[in-house]
Length: 354
Image (cartoon, rainbow, N blue to C red; front, side, top):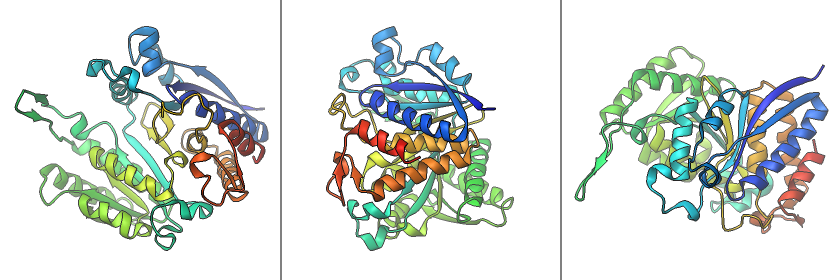
């Protein structure tokens, strides 16, 4: 008897359509292998939603995603919509989407493939074996804090965290660490920010519930340096919204290409899985985008929302085999490439390796 899952799909703008199609292709292959059936329903969000409805986030999309088992997401935005009022831009829809979904935990792995160790701007001996999970609080902090405002001569935003918000994201980090190397490094700026001191105090209290996990603390500026100097020292990095926004992008570049890395945004209601890169409107429609980050996001969906560990492992193994066999999209063609392929071909090869 096959297992059935309802998956909401938001392809979005730019290369979103191309890369999500490849992830669905690979999910089809893994579904056949493990007797899993995926029922997909597509929804609009971002620039395409603005063009169709005048709204970057239609209510139909909110309702559809909340009623699904998980959401597979592409990318949104582009210069076409940059001149709209801020509340009507695709990015405003994305912030509201995260809030409506209640996805408070952003999981951003940064993994270096052995075959691509030369793709990074850092020396191979620094990054070989790097396997980091950044856990970023996603719907609190300075991006959502009140009061906020702007006059002609002054602008202000407020960084706010409650104990409850810190507790729930800390539990996510510690539970992940229990499945990894059992180390959490919590990032803050407690030497100058009261909100960071609350973050540190709360994290230390939650750590007592996970005695097997080692908790350390690091100031955000030092962490930015240490990610470059010695990234292998990190296992799970736990941090707030704005610090996590910056550090997760920094960590992503350890791999050498932003086209390789997936992400998950999880909460109590649902979870959204998407590549960390944007819509890349400059290459949209050319068929040259790297779909691996989106395919890896589909693997995270299987692992964290659907509890299909074997299927997730199969996708991860298929990606690694494809890398080991020397297939590369254009962004990685300079690194141990035996055959350069386009977006569709990369999806075909990974699917065939399931």
